[in-house]
Image 1 (spheres, rainbow, N blue to C red):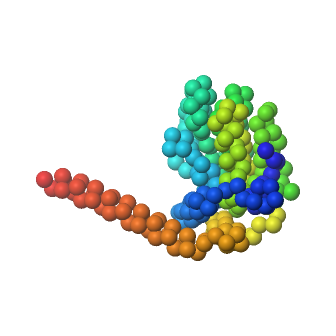
Image 2: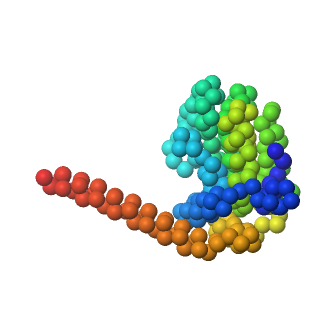
Length: 243
């Protein structure tokens, strides 16, 4: 696996893509969904989610006690390693390098060769770009790979290789999301990620705008169904209270 990734490595030898049109559409759908929810690290979440299995474990900093959930997830990953069941644990770190629990998790995952992927946001590391930032080096045998934080396809490529490696028992990887020097600047990273991906798809003759209409319609329908279901549940509770 290489030491860095941008959109220029999203194709195989001689420029022939190694990603199917169906996977491109899934990546675009995930990017739109995460950006629509205004989530931090939208591109990274989309690029990693595209190859997740239903039984994989994802730990984020948004809810609950992050330290306790990381500890529990590492314990589960140790069991997965022993069982050789191919299940992954993904730990998403929006504040990379600042949590003692994450640093300890790096060490443990490396020493035990756990099937763990760390996805770390390094954009705020002094505001520096990939070329300027003092990024961390390899921990033991665990690679630390810088990737453009706004490039869904580049992140997917790194995640795909890292996840395959972890499922096969070769240990963890750190994916370091950084500001790429050539990236467009935007106040909202999710918007930039979607725009970058749209340009990339259209340049290769893929129907990005048609996909966008279809995906947004699907997301709206899903949101309406969820709202209706929540409303029905609230009505049921109210009826129980009145009974």
